[in-house]
Length: 300
Image 1 (cartoon, one colour):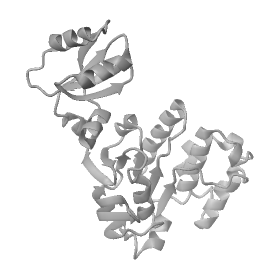
Image 2 (cartoon, rainbow, N blue to C red; image 1 turned 90 degrees about the vertical axis):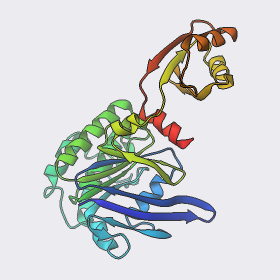
Image 3 (spheres, one colour; image 1 turned 180 degrees about the vertical axis):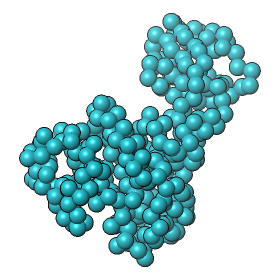
Image 4 (cartoon, helix red, strand yellow; image 1 turned 90 degrees about the horizontal axis):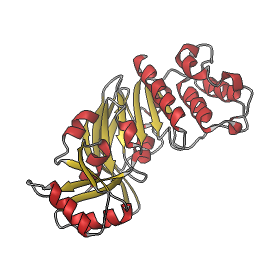
């Protein structure tokens, strides 16, 4: 059971949150919606989980229409919103029992589905949810979203504010859930997480920029990227932006990612130009494009 979105649009007064969004998620696929805050990811998730009604367009989730069959969708999907929204004064076990009861099931009935996740927080089952760490809250929220054995799982920026180790563990858990036949749609502002998805959609200002596998999207990058480094990062960026042949200049860790607008780019010429700007310890080398580079190029 997958997801089908066709020409979905949504506005809040004068703000166009979504503009003619269309894409499909295959059954059992791990699909990523990649974009910055304000791109429209949460609005789309709320429409697909029947919490909002689109101004225009249609959508189907697990074979059900989001408007006509909203009750069936709510029984067949799991939703983990970006903000921790469980009952903070209830314990871990009480929260899980509460959500199981709502869906007419029990922890024991679907324990095998959540076992890999729940065993990590079970030692703290009597602790109030509000007293858990960020990573533990994340695991509890995922357990609650899965307790009724959904066909489709929606995760809205699930790793925001979570430490790197917990982020890695979380994505490993998603891969295991996918193997159990669950279709997963996850949104994230982290470009490094995009590479962990089967396919991704890059979204900016309510519009889809491109949809493909992470590898294919990176291959589409039209230019050679160069890592540039010098003794003064701030001065380096300003100098590259002032260089008349620059196509793009973006800080990228300890380097600046630079692309040139000429087909006959001369590396030595660029180095001489930077030296004329009183920069030293200059390093320039070819590098591979990333999803972040591709996103920045498309967003231009």
